[in-house]
Image (cartoon, rainbow, N blue to C red; front, side, top):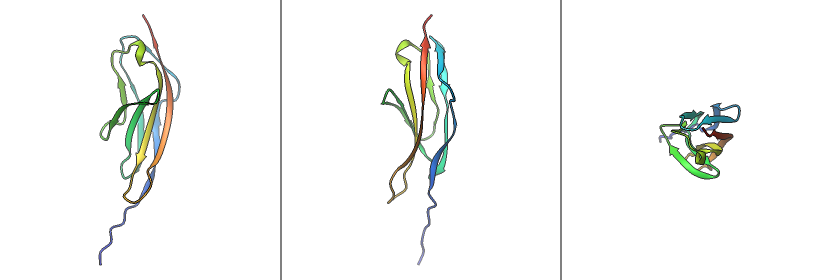
Length: 101
């Protein structure tokens, strides 16, 4: 009889923004969210509680050509989901302000 063992490691965010961010209108800025865990965490970004990115291959979120409507509260959620187990998450929030020209 053969058994497969899956070692589940709860997600941890290892690199993140540490302070509120100000972006000049028209500029580009990448928000960091690097997470570890097993299986590999799925990273989802929210702006003001609306899902803006869910990408298994890109954990960071880029604001391109920032405009006023890009300002808000951004939240990165790292989730590990193993078959038969509950989803475990880690998250952090960063405030983004867009400075108009």
